[in-house]
View 1 (spheres, one colour):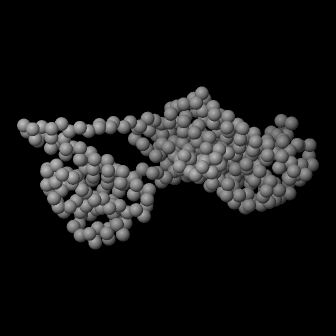
View 2 (view 1 turned 90 degrees about the vertical axis):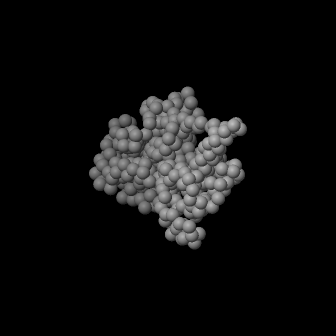
View 3 (view 1 turned 120 degrees about the horizontal axis):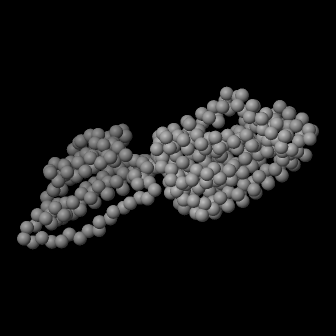
Length: 376
């Protein structure tokens, strides 16, 4: 039995590694995808182009402007006193926001009166606009507290206490709140799924296209041995990609790694049960490699969207939250991010491992049953 499986395994390795396109998919795709997600896919909003309309032009107004432009979140791109010009700056996307300070700003502050400041934001990009408003609110609140304290200290002879809540936030596991630390480890799960799905489904469909699968089936080899011999090489390739992406994450992007790498390998092994099973199932319903590739992507993208890789599952409608329970990416993401960023162990992650094991056995059983019926 094992001799027949090893023969198939060697044949599959030679077939895959002999094809230059397959070598590019196996070794080039992980590097390219990791670089893309590491640099381009980020929710961190910084260096927002900001136009200034300062009609007060006093020490207080200039100090407020300095607080905005001196932060890492805003870059001053223009100054104007004309509302139409400010509108044109946003329309042309030269500015994503306009900070407008009306005359009398400093006088109102010194009189202890509210001093309104308007921030006009380009809401066409709602995600960026939301972050811009949050950043501006924090800066304005900080400036307001500093002004109130300064005013209190200036009231000689009748000093009044200024009460305030001194919030000192601290983010564990990602002190600088870098979204790169969140996304780059998650790429491991996406690459393992995409490559194992695509290679498994296309390899078996290729045998059907050229007619060799019927020749193999008339030999003493059994269907289970054929499946093991065909899928084992792609499991090995999956582990190679895990090591490759992890090395890039640690050495190039300097993503912190606080846990046990063996736990990631265990999670990936359980994850591969599901992905290889799904790839096998796809091969039973497709007749050409083109169909197999299209079906793979048809399955992959919804699985990615409903996994929590980009959007929190808790924010999804209840139906999709329930649907995500049968999505293996959901569980491997928790394992990988937990090991990378939090350093948690098996005592915390065993529910995710158990879920992957159950899903993997179920999917593989369905796929093998379907494969046997297809051969029959």
